[in-house]
Structure formats: structure tokens, C-alpha cells
Image (tube, rainbow, N blue to C red; front, side):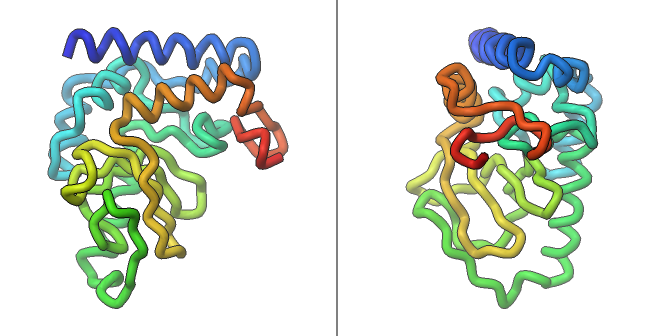
Length: 194
């Protein structure tokens, strides 16, 4: 866990350096570190343990303030409370049978569900779509992998084998000038999208 925390701390520092140079106002939108009781509440609510790399991430900054510009591809980087909010919405729909007749088109690393209680939302685009930590992959996947889940599209896309690798790839893309801050789009977006 110690090495994991150091690696994640280094990635956070790279991310914050980019923000300071490209969108300094976003620095004020970072939440403080998650508290141990908040980690317990989160894991008890979602009924699963989170990967160490994501806990290390939250232990530095517990996501961003709600209603601020999006940190990850113009999407809100969810705090633990916001993860609980979004997960509960999906869980209630799941429990009520809303997805029983829905067919997904998952990549081979992802189980064939419209939604799975072990998919933990970590971003939110304001329209019901998320990047999720997948704690229940297929044998071709990796526990803790990052996937894309759409609320109104059957595609379920594999993004990265772990949160750390996802965040590292994102930092590299920021540093390689593949992303810009856009006031019009409400956050950090790919140059290709503007």
C-alpha cells in the first residue's frame, strides 16, 4: 500500500501541475483527503472493497466539488458521497428489475450486464453516464479495471486494467497536450472534441 500511495501521490502532483498551468481555478475545487470513516461508509454502502490504488487516490483528494467544471473529460470526478449517490440510483433501478430485458454489448473483459452492482461509478457526465471501477470482471478482465458505462447505450467499453493505469494514462495525455480546458465545454476535454 505504501508504494501504491507514493505512485498515486506522484500522479496527483502531475495532475495538479497541469491544472495550475492550464486551469488554475480548478485547484480550488479539489476536496480534502477522505477520512477513514468515509472509506468505511463507502465500502459498506456499495457492498464491496475498493482497490488499493483508488483508496490511495481518495486519501489525497476525495474527488472534486459538485457543480464545478469537470476534471476528467469534462466529467465530475466523484467524491465518496457522490459515488454513493450515483451507485444508489443504479442499485435501486437494478433491484426494481428495470434492466431485466436490456441487452448489453460488453467488451470481452466485462460481464454481460446492463448494470452490475460491482460497477462503482467514479465520474459523472450529468446525463447518467460513468467511468466505473469494475470489481466483477470476466476471466479476460482484471478486478479493479476501468470501464465506460452508458445509461442509454448498450456498449460497455474496457478502458484500462486498473485505476492507477487509467490515471497515469490520463496524466500522460494531459502532459502531451491532448487535452485542454474549455469553458464552453465545462471542463478538461480532448482537443479532438472541440
